[in-house]
Image 1 (cartoon, rainbow, N blue to C red):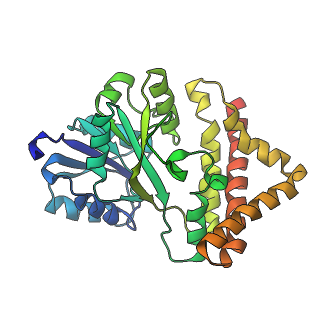
Image 2: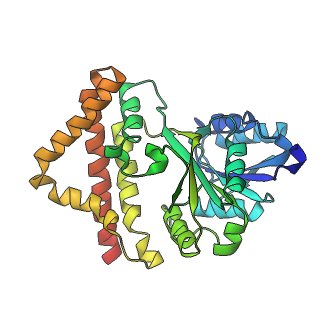
Length: 314
């Protein structure tokens, strides 16, 4: 049976991830998929901490773990370096900031062949990286509609669902058909990739029982910066990929521009969702912290979108 399982190439871009990379590697080693059927390609962008040392230690113990260099230090380059080196017929793209439930790889392959689909993704569950009320509030905000929007891979789904976004597990033929990631994009390379997938008629299957745990920022300053940059790159890719913006791309910008006129409705909705979270978690502190997290996310993303639009136009 094991001989019939496909060879899987796992690609992990990283830079200065000494806090997370070991946990990422351990999660894969404990996944349950036959180790002789995987290769782990970790593409490092000139880390200045102990990331490379940690990877090298594991590479000595497990020859299928390989450290590759990404001199450009950008994610699209890292993915493309990994894909070029991959020998597996299945390619899984992962973040160093994640870990998975056991059986992740086998489930991806099972559903991929069961549904005859080329791209699969699971649910991304935001998980606090610290045991603080702020870190917990940030993680929770990314798993509810008011914070994550209609991103099914974040808020979940009751059953397998076809979605029009990029996946995390692909048949190698996808890259042979539509090409690699756009190296002009410092971020949001998955947006461009999903547009090309849609144009080629390739859909992604969202599977609710495939679970990945993502570790977001744990303080408001870093959370704001992250959302601000996300906002910029929610708009700026259209400068390079020449596709019309959809209404949903303008929503964060519209929110920021109309906030002075709609401040009270926003506050009420914010408090409503925050109260729900506080009741669910049975901790009143969330009622006072989560509203700040929502504001940080919405304002940061909205201002970033505004700057992205300016850069797009000029």
